[in-house]
Length: 174
Image (cartoon, rainbow, N blue to C red; front, side):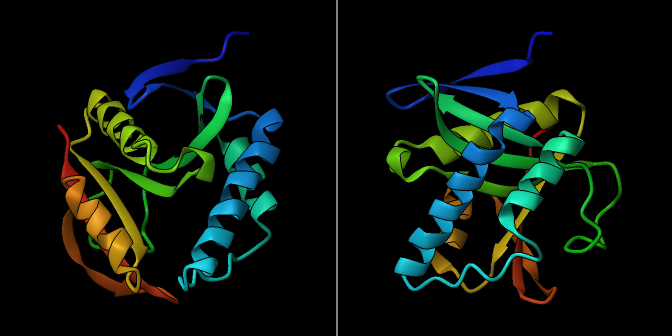
């Protein structure tokens, strides 16, 4: 069985993005744990996940929604792509968007525009499926991350309280 993959240009190389498999669970979990430690060290509260990260990753692998990006074979980043998000976007029309969750970059690849390259891949993938929007949310108490999404071309669509303050962002892609 061949794995579907996408080649995405990135600064200083290219990303190879694949749908994650059970063999990727450790690498994906490590990226999330490293990102969480990095946030905490900078005074950013990432919040507590609703269950252990490894279990979250395993479930996303099982349902086929999580992707792993590699550079030169090394795990460089990840993203989860969902097709609805009724919790954060209850007022959004159904079926018109892909929803980004869990975008994270391994610290060894920080500053190389990996996150932006992953976002651009998501945008093209979603548009290719005929959906006009990509939507995402982030911690509303993280001004740096909010500014990152604005620089990436996303428009702020308000904040909602969902057990945390979530800032919602949307981008027209198709």
